[in-house]
Image (cartoon, rainbow, N blue to C red; front, side):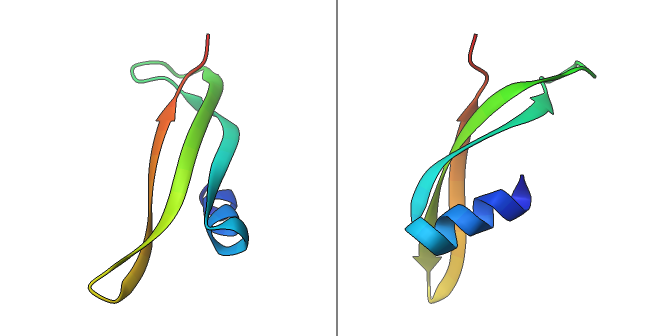
Length: 55
């Protein structure tokens, strides 16, 4: 997922990434969606994201 986060930010500046990742306290992977956006803070590039597990 990390590589996909970077690809979205580099290619589009921001966007949605869907992937599988275990919910907190679980070992079985579940579908998860994360929105990522490229940012620059004090001249340093980075990204910020927030995700959720759809039902």
